[in-house]
Image 1: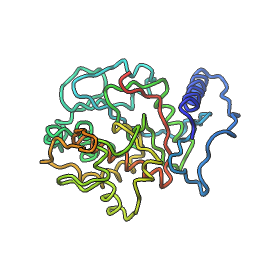
Image 2: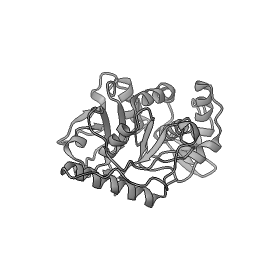
Image 3: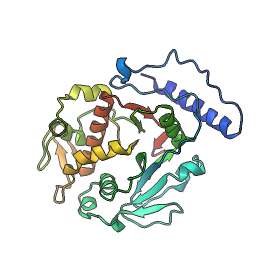
Image 4: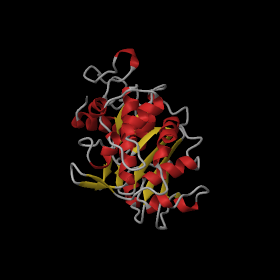
Length: 299
């Protein structure tokens, strides 16, 4: 697996080449790949494998339909998107779950959607409510990839171009773009992966029953799980996720749970965060590929 420093260096290399292409300068296609990790035999990535950033940019002959929702409660930080070009900014939709704000950007409000359940915000599903309502209202239908971020995340230069270039460079690959992984596993809301709670079947048991699999917690630890409901994934994969996870959106769910072993309280939003990370990790086990993006949480 690439180290953090190696991956950041690869991101910088791609950013430089994107800039050279924009200026009309030649783009090198002769980077050495000898030291980069390769997928396992059969074309599948081994558990936990994080792809290198592509070192050359293919032609933009086929438009990629990308919809990214940035969830906000009562604060918007327009400067967090300053490093993106106009094309990248055009993929963003600010998604309001509470307060109205003059954003100067494309904005939708959850409570104005045709299908809206106010109990999810009341019961602290937080940004998890956005995952549900975008799915329930088919907002991402027609997009090739869909993403979710939060208001307090700052995008690095070329962050979205990096993702779109990787997608074009790897046809047939299920790409999962993320910001960070959980530092550890099965604490707080992540206990909902391995334990039952009132009205909630443990996530891994539910997954194995729904999809007819027999995965264990060991593979989740080895693969790592993304944090903060923050990702860009194929729309078909998002629909697969939500078809299973919709059962965890419950009108009269408790708004607070407790991990007694670690003395940690958590809410339904943390449960959805954990289940999303679990689901995407298991997709990597089945051949999807993680890619880290230059996005910073609470800079």
